[in-house]
Image 1 (tube, rainbow, N blue to C red):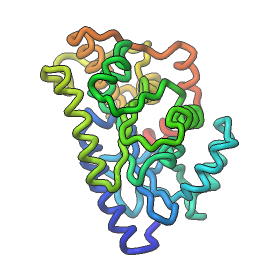
Image 2: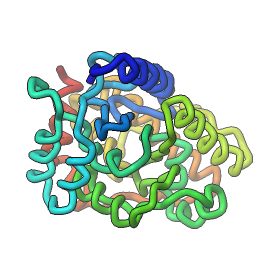
Image 3: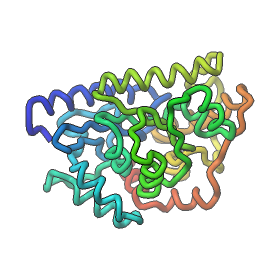
Length: 288
């Protein structure tokens, strides 16, 4: 996507911000989260699936998409197979063999720069039964999006909930935080402000990792990446698995301390996530 010097400079800025955020495991565990940047010609660079934000490089970590074509294609896209075909069709580099993030769809619907993280502090809201009500007080300008399976289901629900608006802050139930802004630095600043606002609202220190042992048994899922990195025994002891289990331990312990009640995903959703082809692809990338 290095068509112009300006675009390359923008991607350098996006990569720098991505690495800064990705280095904090309280924000990003394993290969989770993603960042994107659009130009004024309708192009969008988004993190390639399986690439880690902590190590991403401007020249190799992002995949260029036609954001306008993606938005148009979403109107008649209703299943994962069609969504995968649509994403591949919108890739601007004909020689690209990697996949763009499965969350490219909702990135295309939002502002110029989008940062999506699995912040454990934001997820105290999104993964708790009391979270939606608390979010109305703590982050009154945030848009709350109910839970949906990552991919086309989540993208369509985000679009439906947005209703044509362009929110700057989105809370994804049992998933994470999304912020949008005009450029990478401004968007990263907003991301920091949102997290600090949540921490300050709870009125106490919320260290990550939480002191004590990390979760060993976690049959109940709080968020999708828990299925990706902990349900496969071979990945539980990987760095991604350890970071994910630290996030689960933090959420359960901090919720208990704050008198919040965990909101777990259903057994049916767990089964769906474990068998989702896009998530199996991400598991394969961890093993590679």
